[in-house]
Length: 250
Image (cartoon, rainbow, N blue to C red; front, side, top):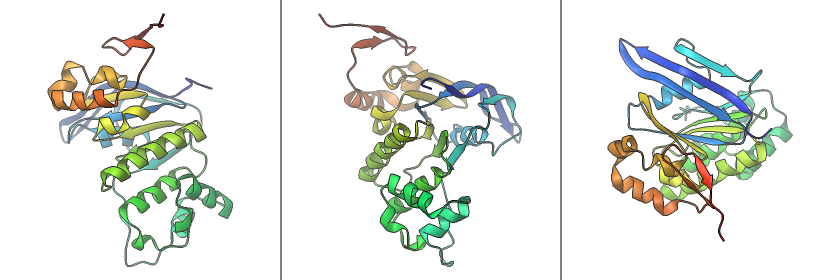
């Protein structure tokens, strides 16, 4: 169901060692929508994803998930023991009990079916990211949580990866929560942006967030201008909050 809310976060607050990492964070994740978290280093982006996916269970506030919500998770860093022989197929088998057909389908969805019998240690960074993305799709997840899925990949690979994530969203009809360091690259595929710096500086459509005073204070006008280049055309206009009013051409 379009616009179905799969997860609702209310007033999330998290501290560690007396230091506030997240303060009063609220948002919703909806089916078939991509939400991108941006923010400077140390903003709490990975911490927030770990609260969403359940890896951090002790926090103030509330996470309300739809019943039996299936989550696929890709962490920012995955450490693979290069001394241990491990094929791509075996790596996916270790994730959960999956049939050979399910593994083939997952790898084909991320366009790396040809890597099935390759050793993981022989993969390039871009190939490994696609294999790990395939792994997140096993079990037909309703929510993909992807923490900087393009880290270590060149710009061309980044663009292709974001396009692929958008295609997965379309095929699986899942929600995506994506951490990115570069909003303009995910611009055309993002439905909602959360600008985070311990607190939620601003949120909404990419175009509106890029003009928000707190976004400009964090990233500067140049970053905002680079987003404008990628802005897609609408038949309506947005205010700063991200709300829109229809504007039909004569």
